[in-house]
Image 1 (tube, rainbow, N blue to C red):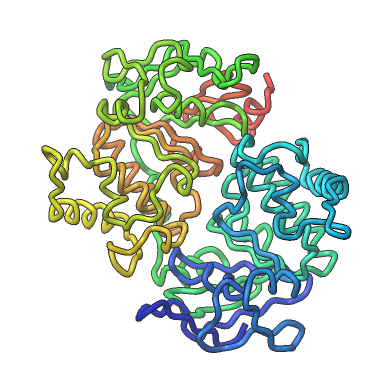
Image 2 (tube, rainbow, N blue to C red; image 1 turned 30 degrees about the vertical axis):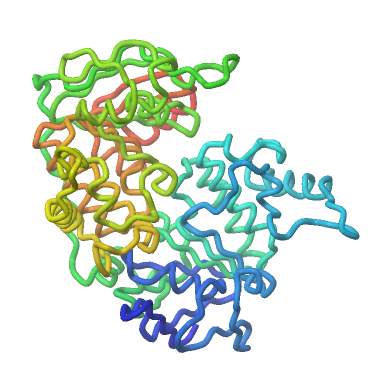
Length: 500
């Protein structure tokens, strides 16, 4: 890609960007949220047309007019946001728009067999006839990867492919990436996880503010230099490293005792089975576990998303009995939930930044049912400025923001209700390294202000750094709890996989 220029209205998002990709290499495309990474890949994938510059494949200029043309030309993209149809089966999603037919008749058996082969390659033990909507988000992420692999592409773009995956799933994905490299496939890999960059990258290209900054072999661009290229400044990574431990005599703000969350199917085992823990004021408790452990279901249950009938046991907020009736009831009682899927249940993507950032605080900005637009805008401005949101305007539709900036809007929404208890499920998913440090600082500020925080994160260094205590779950049960000083990655994974 040579001299790529792209503007949306008066806002130039790419300015003379170059990106070289060789056969059989993993090339990491790095940059902060809003740097232009996804836009550049959408040009490669035929979603957008460049205003200037050219794309060359094997030395020949090409211009794809649609994603279908790009796929036929050997380019497959795994986008950061899922593009699956929940009501359709796994096999139908993998071959959606490319159905296998003979003389107009669908070859369901062929699609089923090919889907089984692809799922097996990714280590997924699920039936191709399973409805995608019945699967957890990590499985859906792997199905997106299977969908891309089914194209047998010469160029594969992976935009945050591990954002919803646990450690064993990440290992399987990296094994697939190495196989693709050996077969000569060129892989563009976008990630905000530094440990992934240096584990998988052959070369790194950095974009900043829509401009090309540098391209170099990974061994010649160590982490401090990479970060400096990305953010344009030195970054203090000790934001939370020296923080004080939460006070053991602080009052308990959240107490969960013998809580069970039942599945919607009567015969299925409980999603959460007789779990108990407590969180004190000014404390961050990490809730660890592999996919299917029930940790996310527990947060949904406490937040009232399942209603009262499916949740039993005792929950107390600030010492007072609390029944999780509904999300609205939870918000009124000072409980906030950052979900792990911002597109589906964290944002209203058709609305602008202001409306989303103040959505949970509507009673505050619309007393007696009358919306005070000045207060609404002021509240959104203050919260998004604290998170360094990158948007052309606060009236910009959230759907047009990068994934990381969308996550900042989600956090701003909950900042604005000033909750006592924060339930955070993957709060830094899809967020760049600079913004992560800012979010870490915000969490530490909330902790110091006396909030109680429950944290789920698939990034083990993040879990170990931020948590005062860690509760590990396996198959719906809390199997162990450990203090921060006792916790190690090995101990947590051993317990999460059902070890003694």
